[in-house]
Image (cartoon, rainbow, N blue to C red; front, side, top):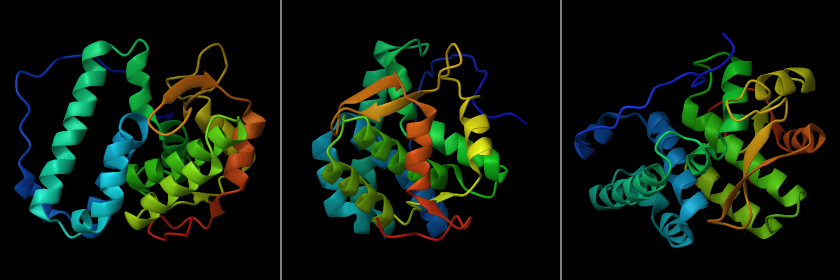
Length: 222
């Protein structure tokens, strides 16, 4: 009832298999939701990959096999590099949660299943980028660039109006919260993530600037 991904155990796989043919079974909304995580990997770790996504996002949405294979391979390399350095999520691995503090709050606040995880993460990345701008970490043009790509992926770039109290409640149960402080994965420039606490007033300002009606499939322009 309080959230997701709050408790877990770590078991390393012996083998990872990516059967790309399964992606062709996904409806467009589910495919877009998956692209949120692809964009996340580029935003936190690889500006060149971000530029590649900008050039190939239409091919990915059209399920072009070559584009899908390239995206999956690059995401696997990024995640493997991060996890290898922080196997049990004591520090660095938290950067894989970019957009997820806001995103998990959306999922919990709306009720699980109303927004797909990727839709919530898509809007969450826009909010996290905006918060990065407000804290002087990220150039506004880079936040706008990221929001444009998220919108082109078929994802929402506006957040539901949960009310300030509910937003704060949902964010404060995030697994990155320590000592009552909500910590966010922010961008100190594209490809340069940083984990830091931020005033709730600033987080609320980012939310207020990006509200939309509670319709997960509606995509607003950045």
